Length: 120
Image (tube, rainbow, N blue to C red; front, side, top):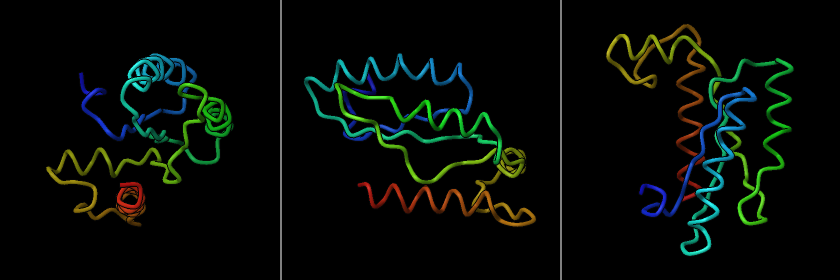
């Protein structure tokens, strides 16, 4: 499948206990493949509501995730829950093209892109 074809793997996780639990299935699959083919993996927090207890708790829960004993690093960039992401799609644009009031969504995507390019 897609995992076996990858050299790098991003695991998007929404800040909810169900999403963290669902991530365990992905990690199990990655662990199995990783014994044969080394795959670098990172966690991407997505749709985070800033300054909430749940976001902090999920961040802590993700710290313990490992693939074959090796900690899965989290990407520094966090994508927050912003209406600009949905509105840009509704207007037929990517968020980088969409002009919202403060440009924070576009800045997050730019930051993610830069971080991924350094990782490559």
